[in-house]
Each structure stands twice: as structure tokens, then as C-alpha cells.
Image 1: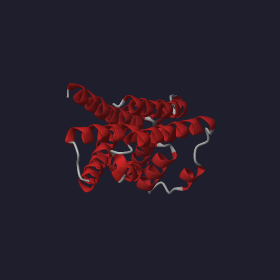
Image 2: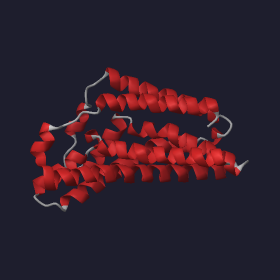
Image 3: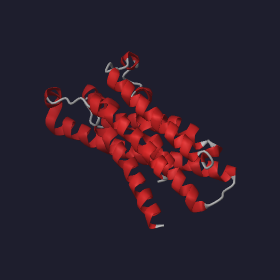
Amino acid sequence: MIDDITSVTALWGAVIFSGLYHGINPGMGWPLAVSAALMERNHKAMPKALGMLALGHFLAMIGILLPFSMMVMLVDLEKEIRIGAGILVIAMGVYLLINRRHPKFLARVHPARLALWSFLAAMAHGAGLMLVPIYLGICAIAADDTGHLAAQSLMTDNITTAFVVAAVHTMSMTLAGGLIAVVIYFWLGLKFLSRTWFNLDVVWALSLVLVGGFGMFSAFTGH
């Protein structure tokens, strides 16, 4: 029981940490919130822009997690599904390491459609995939705790968990990105941003490989 509580705490901590990590990454959109406030010359435009970015990110997370949540065979094929998900996440990380080019279609999205841009950016960068091994670990422990459940009940619980994971992750991302955007807008300015721009593409790709490897290890060890 204590091991399960520790594992659940660690997994939910990973959900929050990955959200903070996504929020810090400029590729997830916080510079666009700064730009929106500067273009409208109104700081009130920033929370609106952050809200749209959060909406798009949340929908992207749900779009990735829901198919896994609907796998009624999750208990019987739990290990196989978790290993497959880990391989998929690692493959995405390797792909991003090889292909460093940013998706060109993101530049074609109108600046006013921040929710759409955020959704597409999260999908293109594999942000939702990063959550899959963590989410499957949470579902596996929950299934063990509740014992033999009917398939319908299990699927309902998994869908609810998917929404909660996506919401907690998105709130963490928005908090981290929002704090950076506020500091840049009110105190540091765009000149500081242009001089100190940081690129997390390689770190991002490596983190996908790491999370995928963690998911496979957890599946093999039964955690």
C-alpha cells in the first residue's frame, strides 16, 4: 500500500513537472502571449492569449490520452500497452533529434488563432505523448487498487483520469509560461528576450526518449 501511494505521488508529480517543463519551453507559446499584449498595447490581452494557448494544449493532451483511456483491455494487456507506448514516445524523441526543423505549417496559422496554433504545436512536438507513459502508470495502479472492475466502469475511470491528468498538466504549463510572459512583458522587455532566447529542441527530444524509457522500465518492473 505504501509503495502504491509513493508511486502514485511520483506519477502525479511527473504530470505537474512535465507541465511546468512545457510551460518554460518557448515552443509551447508563451512568447505569443507577450506579443499579443504588446501588439494590442494592453496587458489584459496577455491572460486572454494564455487562456487560448491553454485551451489548445489541453485539447491536444486529451486527443492523445483518450484513445488509450478507451482501451478496455488495459488490465489484461497492461504491460504490452505500456511497453508499446514507451516505444512510441522514444521513436518520437529520436525523430525530433534527427529532424530539427520546426513544422512549417505552424507559421501559416493566423496569429489570432492561438488555440489552434497551440493544439497543432503540442501535437507536432509530441507534447501529449510525453504524458502517455505517466498516465498509463497511474491507471495501472488505480486498477490494482480497485480490484476486478467491470469493463465499462474501468473505461469510465480511465477517461476521467485522462481529463484530470490533462487539466493538471495544462494548469502547470500555463502557470509556468504565464509567469515568464509577465516577467518579460512588465520588467525585462523584448530586447532581453531577443538576446537571451533559449532553444530547448534537443533537450525536448531527449526528454521524450527518457520518459519513454521510464515507461518501459516501469512496465517491466510492474510499477
